[in-house]
Picture 1 (cartoon, rainbow, N blue to C red):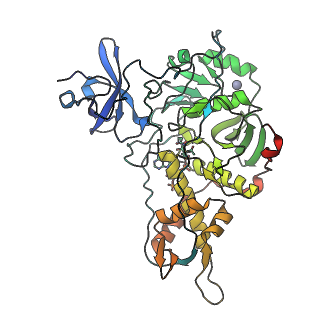
Picture 2: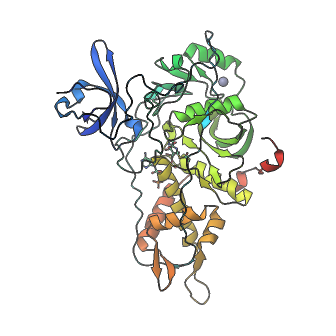
Picture 3: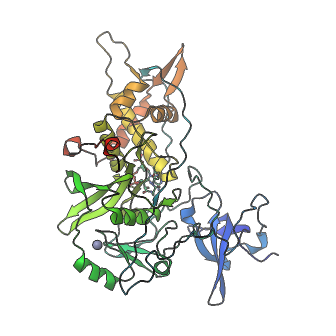
Length: 457
Ligand code: ACO
Ligand code: ZN
């Protein structure tokens, strides 16, 4: 029997339940004389990767590395510079360095062609097949660990991770735990925080300026000096206790960089690069008498040649699956409406990104279709893809893919026909009744800038 080594595969008992899944060994270490293995469950998202001991491994079913895996990383052979060292050199007692990195674009997706007048029927059959995965409640009391801030069961489908990271360092989670505001959160992926800080059991973040600190004492000391109680930049939206700030990545570079480092802990398929100047950041907060507490954000290129209206989007794990992701998406389309443009999120989407966008697109398009009333002659209503796109600011390709995904579109007597079944209508009504938090366009106070005229951002 082979010794378990990096690149080998074997069944490993999954952390939830008693099932075994084939997993690849990414790395190995010895702690107190015991072998520990960092493993990746094949066909599952990387956020489920973890350290396991041999008691969870079926060692007698071990397989050698795949032949095609010529590049399977070997311990210590990560790409040079993949883990940035402390940018400012030495750390003082409490001071931590900043890091200039930022999300990079993924490749654009191919476009499909379809723009015909669509007839809307209210019969036939179709169904929505966005399958939710049960997940434990994310809300935790003060300073409790958000240990399970990930789907409780692995996903077999929908992973959109574009790059196959062959760098052993960036393939592995490097931060054990973060504490931000009243939450402790277990990160999902690698983020290039300075190495000496990633060796700590907990990384402390100021919830207002997002500076990272090595201890609670340092954080307390920092909070006495830190004047921010809300993100920098302009508040562009406020309704109830929900507020959005617009932050210019050039004017507030340190904040933008800290935000990207935090976001990278939960974003796998984006790599980081150093320049935040070309981006705006829209940070969503919950407001109370202690200040504005970050819930999530999306970033947006100041100028996008591909009509992207979102670069990266994130809700922090403790508030996920409560509708805030769709609130962020809704705001991004409200901005596009003010701009008089259609837009689309930058590709590739993550598995959760795709689920959220599909859900938003489906609900938004069905809202439009359900609102179409037959004319005075009793004729069936007709609408074009272009019209749906103009009303919603959802890019044409996304309208088409959503209609296809919902199985609403068919070709009949030379034209494309939409069939809105009773099931589709009922399902839509049910999902809209669950969608409690919405953007109120009147509460948005925002004017787009013409960045092309500004010379330099
Ligand atoms: N399993 C199954 N369905 C899910 C899950 C999950 N874990 N999480 C969200 N969904 C579904 C919800 O059921 C909901 O659909 P429904 O209302 O039709 O049931 C839909 O996705 C949106 O749910 P929200 O509660 O509005 O969104 P949430 O606050 O969970 O945020 C987001 C979604 C932003 C994608 C969040 O999961 C996240 O931050 N993930 C990590 C970062 C990421 O992957 N971002 C997207 C990358 S793509 C890009 O940046 C362009
Ligand atoms: Zn601060």
